[in-house]
Length: 161
Image (cartoon, rainbow, N blue to C red):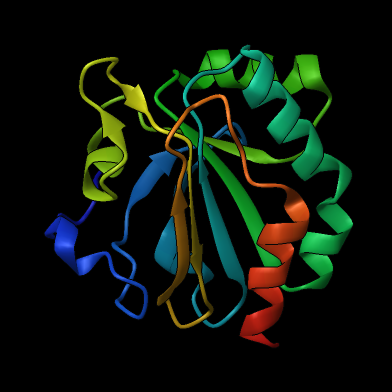
């Protein structure tokens, strides 16, 4: 459960995405760089399991899972919740989207999306291409807002195959 630390200013579009390893609801740790040369990855940071907007967002990802997969993109939800909570959240929603626990907040800090006051991730999206390069990012100003899948899929479309 580590993350390569990188200065926040390096998290510009076109820069390499910082690598990390986090525990997942699939029961194993997941390392971002393992997706290189295989698939694009959408890192979807969300504030907390069992909240209305987060539930709505993850259900929307689930509803469009085939579209994301068809575009060669894997969606990974990331929050500071513990894995057991994320497993229950995933079960309660009936979703397949893999969720990652950033309980130590290293990845949220590295990506510049940790709300230090609330000690949770801000809602944010980072699209990493197959080469491990950050191609698009968006951080919500307000946690109650989220990007519609159509907007995210339009950004994925720009990557090509």
